[in-house]
Image (tube, rainbow over all chains, first blue to last red; front, side):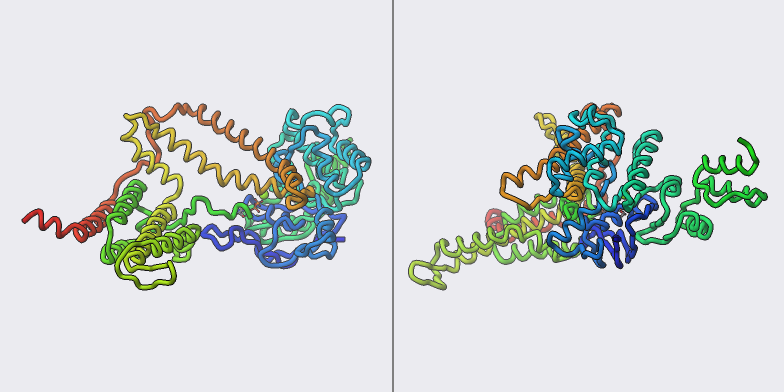
Length: 285
Length: 274
Ligand SMILES: Nc1ncnc2c1ncn2[C@@H]1O[C@H](COP(=O)(O)OP(=O)(O)O)[C@@H](O)[C@H]1O
Ligand SMILES: [Mg+2]
């Protein structure tokens, strides 16, 4: 079970004076069960890359496969393969259209052909995943909710399709830190509970490190680094600097503490775990 | 893809023609069009065609692009030619079959009319190819300004055009994004009968309208916050200024027009003077 991209290049507006090469010979395989973060600057090609993961964009050259099904083909098998990838776009609340929260979340599962009973169960599950109370919200109009709530409705609409892979394009953009933490907590829960593959697009290194077990660094339409976050920070910090990205402050701090003689474990991912580790080393409760 | 549609067909460049003031280009195009209506014979048409070829040459537009601009109207061109060919009255019959008759005069008229149409199309396309839509509306506003005293709301018209043009690519991009998002949720836009298909469009149209209204609202607030209150006493960031190249353009167009007039009415003029 995997999504595989082989030598994919993509050019926007091919054959016009506005032509722009957004992806350049990219190959990558994403297994089910992985939590992959894709990081890169604005305009580096992250969104273009992930839109190839379920055949929304047709590569200019190269091939894309989901579970060994070639996405270039037609027919039910291809359709089914594409539907196994749930895609949460940037600002997903802008795609909400139905009169009630229930109807909007039910749109995907219904298209996938589930029966009404199944749909109801999927909607309920999805709403509990994103912490929206079914009784309170199901019959409300989605357009009267707050920005953060609307985004959770949109994410629930994708989660309800019971995807094998979940792709999220900057799901935290434009949210306050609290709403952001809530959404990531929901994604992590989903990942752990359903054993799906998650692809998280972000431009925040902190987010990437905190949640992912594999990091793809994209620059100028190419994947320039592909490894566990820790390994990348340890071995390739110069390459990150070259594309003007930096390793997170906590990692730098931990590294200089190590050089000063403190033995810290390799598992530090954020300020909280660093504090805990220092306390442990120093025997402070 | 939807966003592949090139807006207003502007073809970016930095040629002599691109750099001309939009007012100059509009007026020159206008004068040229007058020229095509004065022209009657092979010499004058030759001059017009030569002039257009020269403009295409110095604007460095690819020939394929220019040809493409004629394409949408080719049926009308052919019809024009045929109708004049078969209905034209004249002495010199060059072809006849049963009731169909082609005279030399009719044929000449048909060719002339089609040529005139082609020239009109090509010249107005060159105008839009070499002028970005925003600059073009600036030019239109400047040219309409003298008519404000008779009640033409020049600034408001231009502002409406600018905003509409500005939002075409935004809304196309938005439509593209929403379509993709709904496709990813399993929507299928090519399935079922007409009613079903129309219903399938709702998941696109509703978010699109909501976003268009939101953008309009935001824009209105932003404009008001910057004290926008119509065209009264407004100055502009990009001033239009006539440069030397504009003079060159005016003079060469003027020469063309005078030459055409002389060829057409030269003899009459001489007669009048004597
Ligand atoms: N619809 C489009 N039309 C033309 N160019 C585009 C379009 N979408 C993206 N691009 C260009 O492709 C490049 C990659 O964009 P994108 O994948 O959206 O980057 P990211 O998501 O990393 O910010 C950018 O330079 C962008 O300008
Ligand atoms: Mg993006």
